[in-house]
Picture (cartoon, rainbow, N blue to C red):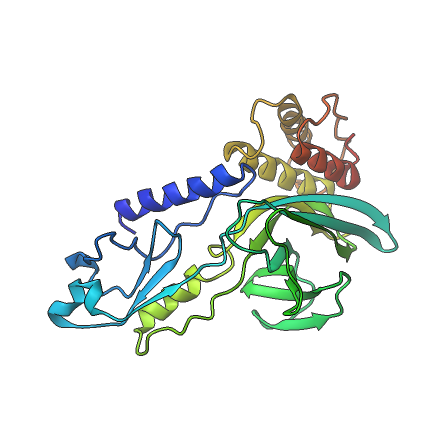
Length: 320
């Protein structure tokens, strides 16, 4: 990827963060920005897929060889709306249930959104062996929605809620509670993803294989969505304490580096320090055993994200 593409797309990622400070840093696009004047630079004339940095959507051009390749106006053009023009807010509550915990999510779509939220995903450990990308239907626990297990790519699993065709989804300024996820796993920091309607645009024919591969990536979940950190099922019962503590330390550090958590927050600083001291106290050569007691926290969580992390720390590590 050339430097110019990276600068443009980092600015786009910053726009997502400006809409929602909790948004996870966006994934860089594998396709170049679409020229505003419609003139394709010579070095990009073999490209068929572009990202319009004004609308945030895709521009797909019919492949053309020769002199016409430089003029987008001479090439059949299809605009493909991405599903990432939503403005979600998310909160979670956790309760003990037979066999584990129940995670219940509340989703808000801000009034300034361009799209209705039609799909909501929470990254989870692999539920059971299935082919990547396969769908297994499950009766929905929320009217108007269906929950399924979904693998957006190999090695990544989610619990996914889709609004039924006849249901309104979550339009702007709307709030829906009751996205329930029963699970036996202990709590950890994970990611949630939100999408608006998926495009049904008919693509130009005869797109080269390279263009189809790039389309698959840019329309995949990690780019074609808005991602937020959240708390969800992460660690199977019996996972050793040091593994859980190490993961919390890593994730909290990432969120602080990204500005999702305030790095100078007393709660964040004490939590990272306590987890670090515990991990350093583990006997040499016995990583993963998790001996000893993690110090209790004196600082109270401030923000909503800190309170949710604090509750997860209490449930999974006994930190209070």
